[in-house]
Length: 162
Image (cartoon, rainbow, N blue to C red):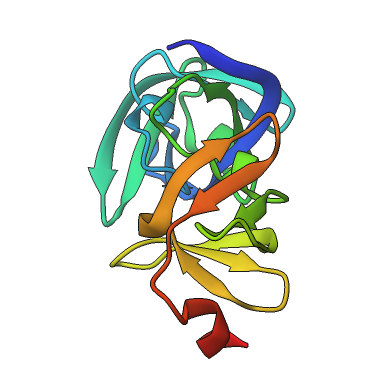
């Protein structure tokens, strides 16, 4: 795994302790399994921790961390946000790179700045200032350096949302 940046990204939260051996039930907000695979480095409660094992459990992930071997120690981490370093993947669109970027239509008109990205079964949605929604399926290119997202949208999309 190659680090994408020095900045840490929020990748999940510790939901609860599980069992007596220090396992943690975690809700990850990423689809990147590298985050919970053996050897992954996670920042929890201001301390780097290494995943020694993990397995799926009820739509979440049970994680065992090196050096965490009892329930009492695990319970101290409940509710903590889980952070990790960015991952280098030139094919991926990263939410932290999309937020604050200007969306430009195929007509060259600036349509607004992305304020958030919403999960949606058909296609995640870019939420623009003013409330316009643009499916990620319409993204044709991203210039992270210029903070610009180029989209090709069906005629009338922005007018219907106005």
